[in-house]
Length: 304
Image (cartoon, rainbow, N blue to C red; front, side, top):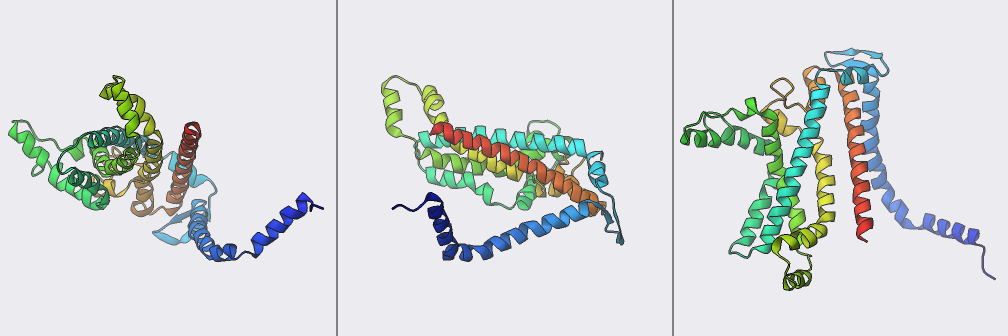
């Protein structure tokens, strides 16, 4: 006589509880929870009190006042706008150039292609502060920079990029750092492209543009979704490049949410408002991650 389904399920659950796997994993899970919950709990605590580093002994519960102050701060709307512009611009540059460069490297046979691949992905492994200093002092500098020398060679007046076009300069620096990541992911995906399918398309009279549009791009749909998801999460917290080059200026011209939170905490010493801003930024990042994960999941489901 077969055992009832409920008894079978209970037996399976009891067996899983007795299995050593759960006990072996529990320490790492506990450490991970503490690693996340303790900072989050402290941030929540500071976000509802008035706490200034200049007066550490004075604390008072203010409820949602810090959130209201952060949202109504003069730098919030420019910071939000700059954050969106920065993320969207870098994603556009990374995806478009990443696809084109990966396709060209896969299609063209030439001596030293392996070296070119290594050089293309190498900027991704440079520390953000170092790359920002290189761009600031060796490329964008209005007196001794490479672009200034190029402008003078053609008889034009050198441009102070970081002063006149601060946000564009940040976009260029960050895109230079993250484009190699897109190239690495997309170039790896290109290796699995069905060569027989491409050859059959060529025999049927399809040109290079048609093959790229109808075969290569659909094949890269999932890798592109992965690039967009991962880069968005990291681009929302860009800080070192702004701190090293423009310090968020002139005014709020290159301030993003991450730099605005830093300014509230360590320049104005207002930990309460900075904590509220940090929670707002975390909320926005989670919304973006949720939307992108759903998009990626839908993409994977449609492909299968």
